[in-house]
Length: 161
Image 1 (cartoon, rainbow, N blue to C red):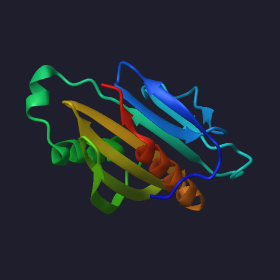
Image 2: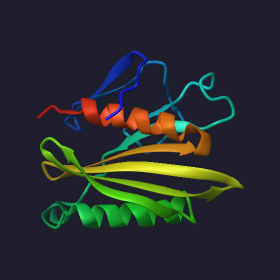
Image 3: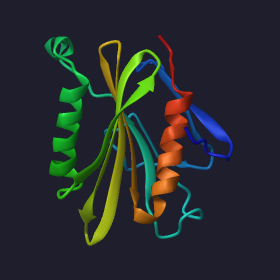
Image 4: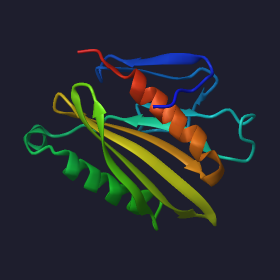
C-alpha cells in the first residue's frame, strides 16, 4: 500500500476498539454529525477540490451481529450511498482486502452531484462482530490523495481489543 509522505497523527477510539494514522495537516470536519471520525484535506493542497476521510462504526442490534456478512454490509452500504449521497453512483471496484483480524472489502463508486463528479472509496471491515466503514470522498482531481490517505489509515490500523 502507498503511504502518505507527510507527518501523521494517530486517531484512537477506545469505544470502537480501533486506532489508525492520518495526515497531520488534515483538519476535523465539524459538520460531520454521524461519523466517529471525519477530516478534510487542507484547502491549500487542493484549492477548490474536495477530499475527506471518514470512519463510521454503525450500531447494530444484537440479532444482526449473528447474520453479519461482508457481502451484506457492502450491499447495504452501496444502497445507502445511492439513496443519500451519490444518487447515480456506479461501482468501479469491488475487491477483498487482507487486513489482520478482519474481513475487509474495498468498493470504489463514481457518480455526480450538482454537476460535479464525486468518487467514494470505501473500505468495509468486520472485526469482532462490529462493522467499521472507512470512506474517502473526493472529486476527480483529488482521487490519488484520497486513496493514499485511506491506504495509510488501513495500513496503520490497530485493534485496541
